[in-house]
Length: 449
Ligand code: GLY
Ligand code: MN
Ligand code: MN
Image 1 (tube, rainbow, N blue to C red):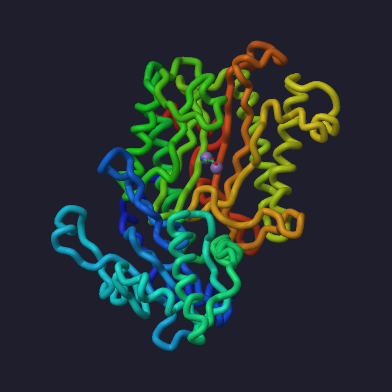
Image 2: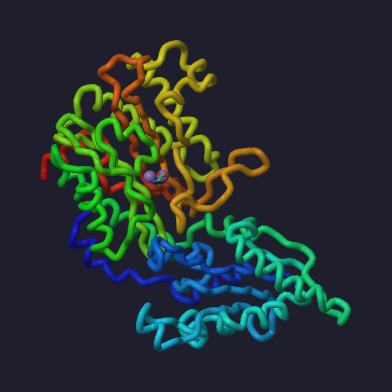
C-alpha cells in the first residue's frame, strides 16, 4: 500500500444522513407498525477516578444515526405522525462545552443528523411513557445495560399505571438483535468503502511494522510503529493489538506486549484499524531477522495453504462453515506430513486431535464490531454465504514451548494469517489482499526495508 495514495484519500466522508434514514426505514419496516424501538447510547466508562476511557458510541446507534455523543437515546416509532425518528440528547451547554468540547443539542440532531424530532435527554422520563402508550411491541436489547433496563421497565410501568384511564401499555418485549443484527450483517456500498479504508490503513501499518522490526526491540516498540500509522490516518485500534514474539505468539489473546523480540524469533502481529467505526482485523507472522527458518517456513506455508483452502470456499451459496472445515482438513493433512500428528486424516479430524495445535475457529463476521453481529447458524445448520457479508479468514498453528509430543525443533512456533473478505455476486474480494502474505512475499518486503 503506497503511503501517498493512502494520504491522498484522507477525507473519506461518513455516510450521508439520507443513508442513515434509509437504514432506519428498513429496520422499522421489518419491525412493523405497532412497534417501538429503543436504543440507548453507550455509557461513558470511568478509567480512573474522574478520567474516562476514550468514548466509543454503541455500534447499533452509530449504524442508525452516526451520532457520536454519550447520554442519548434513539427512539423509532414507525408510522408516528409527528416523526418516526426521535433522538433524546444533551442540550447545548457553553460551560460544559468549554471543558469537554461541543455538543450537538436537539436542534443539531434534527439539522445535522436528520432526526424527525429531538428532545433534551433530561425530558425523557416525561416523554417516553407517552411514546410507549398504544404500541404493542417493544424492541430493545435486554441485558446489555442493567441501569437502562430498569429505566425502561419504569417507563412501561408508568403506562401500566394509567390503564384504568384507558392507556394501552406494550405487552410484547422483543430482542432488537433479531432484526438489527441481520440487517447489519449485510454491508452496503457506503459501509464497504469505509471497511476498505480501514483495511488499507491496516495494510500500511503492517508493512511499516514488518520493515521496522529489529532484533532486541520490545514488542511494545513494534506496536507503537503500527499504531502510529493508525493515528496518522484518523483511525484507532479496533481491538487491543497483539504483538507476540517467540513463545508469546502461542498465547492466543496475548496482551502484555512487553517482551524482547530476538534474532531467530517469529513475531505474530494481530492488529487492525477502526475507521469511522468500522473494524479491520489483520494478522501476519514474520521473522524478526527477515528470514524464516526451515521449520518456521514449513509451518507458515501450511497455514498459508489452509488460508487459501478456506478462501476458496468464500462464495455465495456455500456454507459459512465450509471455510473452517477446509482449513482444518488442510492443516491436519500437513501436520501428518510433517510428523506432528500421527495416524489417519479421518481419525485426526473426527477426534479433533488437530485442536492441540489449532484451538480456534477460522473466522468471524466483521463490521462495526470486530466480532460483528449476525447468526452463524440458522435452524441448526450453517448459514449460506451471501453478497455483502464480510468476515475474517484466520487459520493458525500454535506449538507451545512445553509441547512434548513433537520434536523440539517445532516448539515455541506460533503462526496466524488473517485477512478480511467480502462476499460478492460472483465470489469474494479480499479487502486486505494488498499485504504480503506468504513467506516469500514477506521476506521480499522485509528485505526491501
Ligand atoms: N483480533 C481478534 C481476532 O482475530 O479475532
Ligand atoms: Mn479475527
Ligand atoms: Mn485478529
